[in-house]
Image (tube, rainbow over all chains, first blue to last red; front, side, top):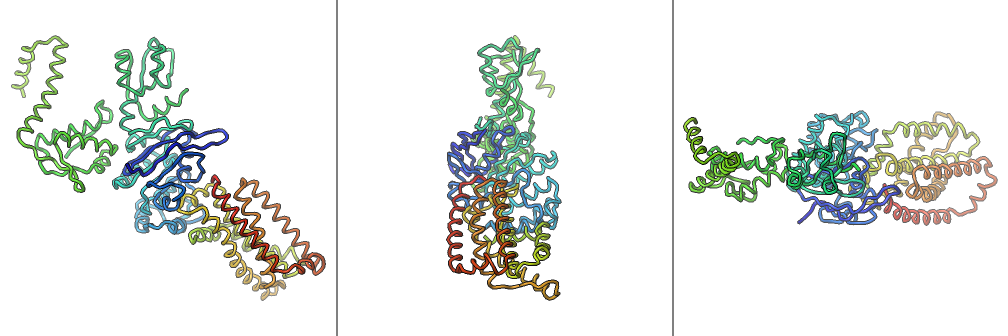
Length: 284
Length: 124
Length: 210
């Protein structure tokens, strides 16, 4: 299996936080959503992949090559979009573009201009005059204009309205029509991923909770609701993130079938959304 | 070709897809040799995961409804008459076995079912 | 590396602060320094301007949100450091031309009597900048921006005080001693420091978390 992105036992220690044993893989042609609450380690993981932070342990291979040894080669084929556009505010779009373009060997100016037209951006505008959404679109245009095979996005849609986010999703769908390209997309706005993602990797407090096909996740995780009388020792072991009230309990199960078999009609089981999964998993 | 997906149905999406395509093939709406949308194109149109559409197509291929040619796409497979008949019967058999199961649970006899069938057939 | 140069020049041109500095610092120095020997003034302008341009460009890659951009582009960390060290010569050349023209105009307009091109000034400035940079660059890489900035300011103040002192005593005192040291020795020391610093910086930057 030739993975486009392979992370194995990644480790990074900070004073108050440790990222530990992070492992997941992404094949060409698919979109992986990377979810987790704020502070879980999403941005850190991405910075480690991009070698902005130095890892303390583990292996990262991109396009089959070690991401540090072949850093330049690998980054030439990666398009990146970060939260809070980090571009230089005083420059115009055109100047910024020509600076960035000179680093990439496969820069495609006509494609970039196409995106400028599609996104309705003025190439002569100074970056500081752009709204958050426009900055994001500009980032995306740059990321998609050098024939990158892997697009890495760190919370690109936070702070953007739903209309905008849907537009971005459409663009991502277009990108993925090429089965050699992949997208790795971290977000805490899980509704975006429920449609488009092929795989979901869930990180919490520096550890990977799961990394699975989205369909599997959505088919197996469910919200269980029932009366407090059901909650004995055995029952508690079956559920995640139990929330008890005076009138009953709510919890997450990672195996709807098993729960159905165990409790039958005594509980109500509904499909869980990615947001539910995140919320219940994070609850102590 | 028409595929409509319900996100709120209990039925897995890939199953909804295979079902609808199967029906259209068996009804003749999709003819032998017709080109199906690509896996990725379909995923995009339906705004679902590529893995889902892939799974649907794989199942359709396994059951002989479609054929995939590397580099060209997926086509409605040639269906010989007997196979078609058999597949159609399979669909009905599946539905009927559910009817039988429920009738037994509700205590309805075989003769009563037969009566019902007769009436329904004559109505429709 | 041309890419980074492009970026730095673009940023220099579009930064209002930089432009203000470029335009007004020379007249400011002139105003403040009536008793400065013209040669020393020229020397100070060369050093200070070059220094300002190199350290400003440094900050883009180590501080603020934009530091993530350059390091995410296909570029070797080594390349980035080497570029930084080499770029001082480019900035130096720019400064020589710029200061030359500026001061020449001032001379023509008889606003003051200044040196607009002084070979000895240039020859003294080069090793000075090299030594300066050898100390400052690794501190930028190794320490937190705030700490590095403090070190930077201290160093700069020291330099400023020393050179103005030299200037004030005119031909006497320290200047005489400096004249005793052969330029070749100073240049050799500067070169050694420069190269060692480059190697140190490469090593430091390689392992740094951006």
